[in-house]
Image (cartoon, rainbow, N blue to C red; front, side, top):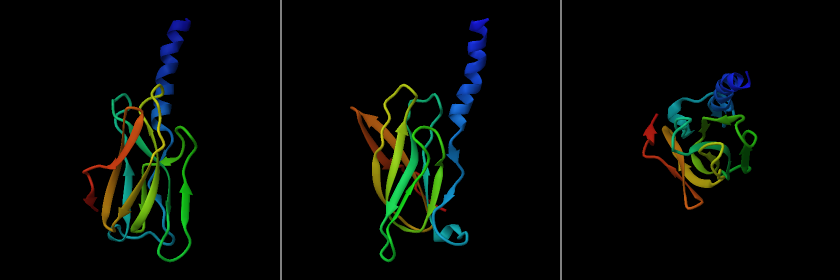
Length: 145
């Protein structure tokens, strides 16, 4: 009986772990919703749940606009909760904080990436790890919105 229950419990648990925690797009500017040509979008890369690629989740960012106060924003809790799949920002220079993971048994990394974003463009950030060090980069999928 025990051997029968384990596979039955594993399927819902794996679906829960793979699907929970990624919020819808997060507007990170004040005021009314802007048209896409006025904002920049940063998307995090998520490969297949059982794939070989690292997943990049946006865990926070900071910026220092030319005018006004600095902005620091954190998302979620360590692990799988409340990380946005994309953030919508005003154009400018940002320091992204990422949570990079491959599976529950592989090492995780928390690198940062400085990125300058332009209005009307979408950027996809990805993670890779070799030799115990994480590299974060903007993929070639940068495109106009």
